[in-house]
Amino acid sequence: MSFLKGRTGLIILGIALLILPFMLGMAGTAWVRIMNFAVLYVLLALGLNIVVGYAGLLDLGYIAFFAVGAYVYALLASPHFGLHLPFWIILPIGAFVACIAGMVLGAPTLRLRGDYLAIVTLGFGEIVRIFMNNLSNPINITNGPKGVNLIDPFHIGPINFAKTDTIAGLDVSGPIKYYYFLLLVLIGVIIINRRLQDSRIGRAWVAIREDEMAAKAAGINTRNIKLLAFAMGASFGGISGGMFAAIQGFVSPESFILNESIMVLAMVVLGGMGNIWGVVAGAIVLAFVPEILRYTVEPAQMALFGHTLIEPEVLRMLIFGSALVLTMRFRPAGFWPETRHKRELVEAAEK
Amino acid sequence: MTSALLEARGVGKRFGGVQALKDVSITIHQGEVYGLIGPNGAGKTTFFNVLTGLYPRDGGEVLFAGAPLNLASPHEVAKAGIARTFQNIRLFGNMTALENVMVGRHVRTHAGVFGAMLRLRSERAEEEAIRRRSEELLHYVGVADRANDLARHLSYGDQRRLEIARALATEPRLLALDEPAAGMNATETAALRVLIDGLRTDGLTVLLIEHDVKLVMGLCDRVAVLEYGEKIAEDVPAVVRADPKVIEAYIGTSAH
Image (tube, rainbow over all chains, first blue to last red; front, side, top):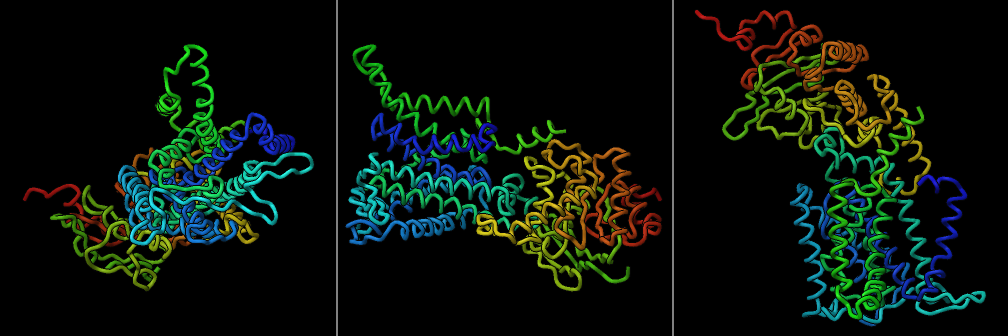
């Protein structure tokens, strides 16, 4: 990102991100909402990147941690139990519970790698979803497939994130407020990710990915470090889940199907495993493409043929499928691969 | 030279019906270069893997610096002060040479997740110390000019040296090298010899498994010979070389 290296680049990016929701808002509040979900996906992808990208542990059930975070928020801030805790208490609780869930998944799978780990994590993701679906009997905890409704939005002092406020003549809608909050969280998560990457722990993760036996022999307690990767990844998922529940106002098990896990994994893989900016780009592109299709494919077909030939959903799967195949064929490291290679090129040029 | 750094007593290892190691006892003295040789399949690498915790042992015990060595997991062994290299080089291919050595510092440093996230002064200082020490070690083994290259792009000889640097980063008291000269040309082997000699001069104890008998005989203070999982000789090179059992193991029985 050479154009962002300089301070001017950073300022331009910052201003662009600040006015973005108002620009999108002109096209309709729906687009701000879509942007918010895209940022949620970025957060998820960055969390999964720790597990898959850094530590090399293929996790196909990552959405389970998102689900845990969402349900923690839903149960602690809705009429379902009559609890209405503020979000700044619930989000850390959600992260903590998800972190525990991550270790519960991590502990029995420490000896597994590759395909076997993928199968177990896939099963774990489904188990969590099925639990959410069935924990309505005999004691109604999750309200089963009906989901939890009327979840509290965020409140900061007098500001209600579900209502529109007018500040200095500008209408600041609920989604726009969430956007700014998400942006702050995203910046925090990116900073944390970068710091982890260049730390003793981050190096240990990559070492395990590269050669687990050599990592052990070099003195790394691979069991603890792998558990840590699961726990960290899961906590990010839990925080995102909490925000998802608040933004959506409603959670049900349907939101946490296997497809979602695969979607997040595709974002990490397409963007460039292990590289933060690649993962961010991958997540934004993959989150926006279906929405853009939804808004363009049908009108375009209507205008051309007078009726809809291909459903946008079908087209979406077709595009995703071919994108994945082509990426694996031509850019197996993703569109924006890990920076280590780039660093090497820069050093060579400096000599 | 007389105090024992490592004492293996009656170490055994069995894979199914194969007795890979039978009652192997060796003593490595502080500050010496100790060679372990033997024909192919004699159990040298198995002994190595037992000693470094990669394989569970089936019998015997290992004393290190006077205390029983916890062989339950490789990282405990590394922590106790035994570092190793692998016969088939095992580097972290997609990390730079410098990062490979920095990973070796893991076991002697402490920064955790929260330290890394908050980047407090103590963590920054530790990170800086890790980097500095790793650069020194790269310099020591002679691959400092490739510090920022990916490990997999290094030449074969440099990879061997880098692996030694990574092992040294764990601050070992005993450095165990598994066939470090395998696949090296004459120049690289000569340079390796100088490196190991230097390690001895700097007071490190070295355990060397090697096929290159000339290198072992020229370099080692004492040599043990394994055959079919049993130790058949242990002494200074000149004596071992003349031992009929050793000659038999290597060349075969002479016709009577």
